[in-house]
Length: 440
Image 1 (cartoon, helix red, strand yellow):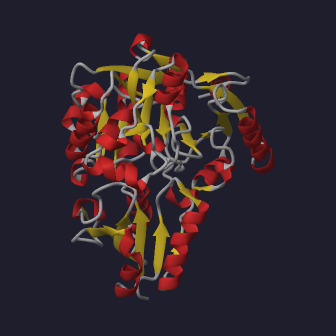
Image 2 (tube, rainbow, N blue to C red):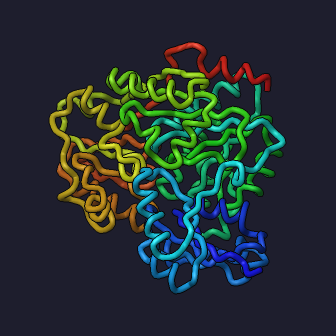
């Protein structure tokens, strides 16, 4: 029989993983190409032969999703496989409709077909939307495991934006490791807080190889999810974070709803800043769709290293990029700190934006008084720096998970101040009691 001709719709993450685990050595399929969206400068590249395997000695091209219909028709595609995250159900079916109308089946692979099974216990921390609070939840879980005397390896959801042949399996234990791998701002935002806590982080492209390396060092594997994707490893405990600032999104986004339905533990985060109506709606959906999950209510307290640099000042607020762009949040920890500490003014960054930063504001018009920390490469980091330095402010408020001063220069007389956030459980049982109940 002829091999089934497939394209994989992705964003340099889930798409590569699905290929590696399900299609790479499967001669029932021919993966003709990947398509790319969400992440800048991915299309036009090649998934390299070193990763694509013996069935694809020339590698696999990565094309733009904008050309979807043309690709399906010209390349006689049988099926299009959706493989990226944090997309509304409606948008998913708009894409599906385009595929169906062009003559291709539209498919999504399930967790069972795309999860490696570890010989060590696996705890997964995932979410229903980008920006729900996975990072601080993962840090809290890591803290608990270390208090229990467990050696952990944190495996981070992929962000392979550079040379894929050099990112097959990465290990980060120091800042020098980040510098050596030329990590982007987006990568640093996820890795640095773990390194600060003394944890080792694995990441890369081939999560089968990554798992084998992580298992050598750890008693427990801790999956640190990205966007609202489900884990690449089959979890023994599936912790899902929901955001009452966006009530109802837990049942309206792909694949976040999959996480919601599969959760062993649901953490309702940000209850200290959300409305009671938002919290109540989330609780109602838990009762309707996953009533057997353990529910933990939590806060994400925000702290500022020097409040005097915000109070009464003209400020520029920089927030975590993915959270406020495709995550759809109009604000983050930086804005919360600025409001609490009563800055004189939040300066609109849009008139000062240059290059790709300006294009980001055009693509995401809901961003008004905040600057997303976009930094997918050296050129974009330079444009972010130019935007920051052009804004007429007293203080730059860094609401991202890392200190941006490590990767860019903020020119005097501007000062910069960091805002941090953590996770604090309000209800019992908490994460510690749940994890201890696993008898690791």
